[in-house]
Length: 360
Image 1 (tube, helix red, strand yellow):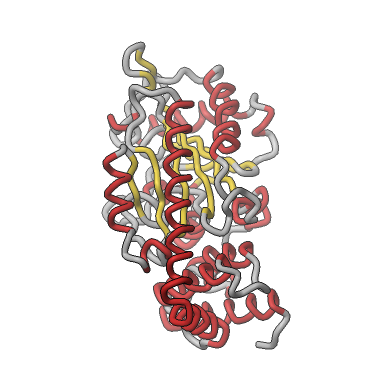
Image 2 (cartoon, helix red, strand yellow):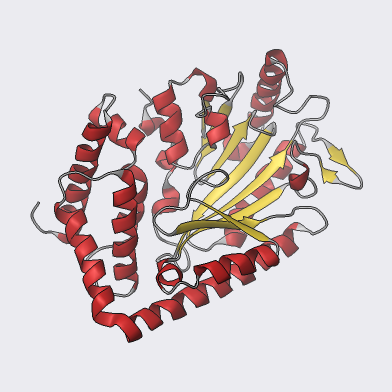
């Protein structure tokens, strides 16, 4: 079983609700895709090539001062439950973790973790350098990866073309190789039925949306991941500034939708949100989808200041630690679905009781 104490800050410092608009924006993530010159892309590389890539990257990391106190995990040597746990913490992608039966974990798959940043090795690209920060903190997240990218680039030759920029396995990532995204909670727009217009507008201006875990994941609990679609033809600064401006507009739309809910359906919304809190507070069994739905309502209640003795940090923790791999890790054994539902409800009851100072 994975020893989480080996991970710098447990890999979840981004849950601390310290960033801007933290009641609406859970996190900001910046990811840079890079490939080493002279090797086939990971999907076409042979086992020996991926292992040589890993060895070359490890050697390069040893000379980067910011990486000397991190932790390297060989993802291809971890059992499925530990790989899922890392995925639930947003530390590795579904692809790197090999969670799809038809696409098993690759040889040489690894992740290097430092506080607030991580480097995935042998994912779709040879390197995925990423940083996750709490709230809306686009500039800070980019600064965390920019220097790291430069230091590594001095030690390993990146695949680069004078016209097309950084070369990537997927052509849509070529150019800067930058994907910037925010994980945002939009219940107001969903309840006022404005979400369809907003999402359609995002696609028209070059952004895309996905679920809680990015590409291929479903939208649950009114949590959306918004990110840039293109990386070619614009500088990093232009991409980041554009995302910041669009996301700020979406936040303003969400805040306005919340005001409309209170104005036009105040007692109905209050009743809905307090019922959700009561269910989370006292339920004895909760599926993941149920938990996400109720958690969304309670998060909205906190944002509207209907519930004042519950912190956003606590809600962020519930979002991650009540997932199946985390529950199994806490229990020290594999759980059936029904056992996980019981453990989830028990965990949430305990956390809410501790945070509010009430009884269980």
